[in-house]
Length: 252
Ligand code: F6R
Image (tube, rainbow, N blue to C red; front, side):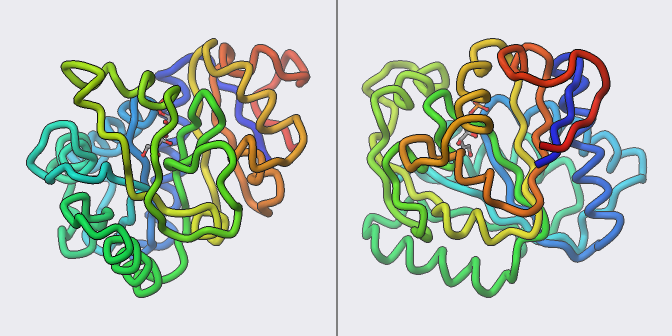
């Protein structure tokens, strides 16, 4: 695993955007695995800026998102479809027929997951998978205790995740209780993985996930077994990790 220590959120966003941009420039028809949440917002802003300056072309890129709430339509501002539209898709020249998320409106969980697995299989191997990190170590919506070998599945969100996501909704009752998520098996099959983390409140889980034992209780810990993972994190998020105090890049 390679760790990039960045100064702050903006530096983290720019560094991660550079890595994604390098992927698109090296392979214009690449498959990107994308994430939502607060952490990638600055990355998407930077990518959109580079596109608007004529430096980045998304016309051949395919994207597959990690997850979507169950029971929420793409027009709902809290949906991940809406998030992607607002933060990235409408700002770049992506071909919408190549931008995929699980279908939150599909009430039949088995059908929704089967269809999304088909999408993932026909999109081909993900070249670069972007991941945020939950406070409990979740990646996508793979909560602690998830079997590592799962593909897309329906999850019941943990209380901690409901609390963490409450800030995006008017009340706690409105936070959906279930979501469709890519499984760990799908995530681990990406060629490269880029994890982004910012803030002191994530320092404990960064240490546990990347320097502690690999266990389903900390889903992100499985990333220690992936051959090409880059962790781009700011100083606050890395503050509990035992890494040299100077320099910007390490391999562990
Ligand atoms: C989002 C996702 C989640 C988030 C994680 C961190 O698509 O799958 O795993 O990446 O909850 O969220 P933030 O960035 O809001 O701290």
